[in-house]
Amino acid sequence: MDNLSVVSIRVDQRTDSAPKVQEILTRNGDMILSRFGMHDPQEINTGLITLNVRATKGRINNMLNDLTSLDGVRVNHMEA
Image 1 (tube, rainbow, N blue to C red):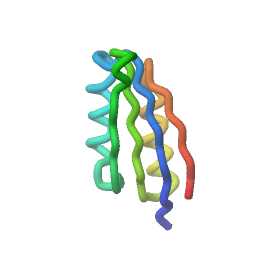
Image 2: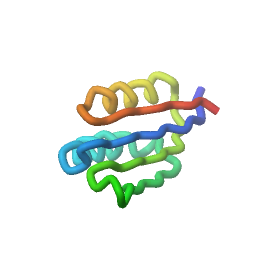
Image 3: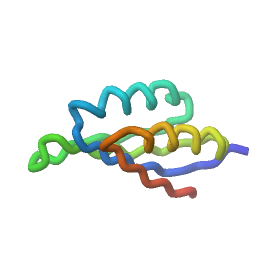
């Protein structure tokens, strides 16, 4: 059964981490319903991405594990 979730991703060291985050999100793009990304103008090297995703718990957890394994990336997850 597919689950609807909200994922927030804080990317510190954007210039180093962003390409790796983008690779993971692209690989999982078929489960991403919407995506909103922004950077804090006062924090030049920090960004925030919010996702709405729908997939099995296992697939969502795999993506979360891939993201949290990256240096400078913090992830929060909320199931709806």
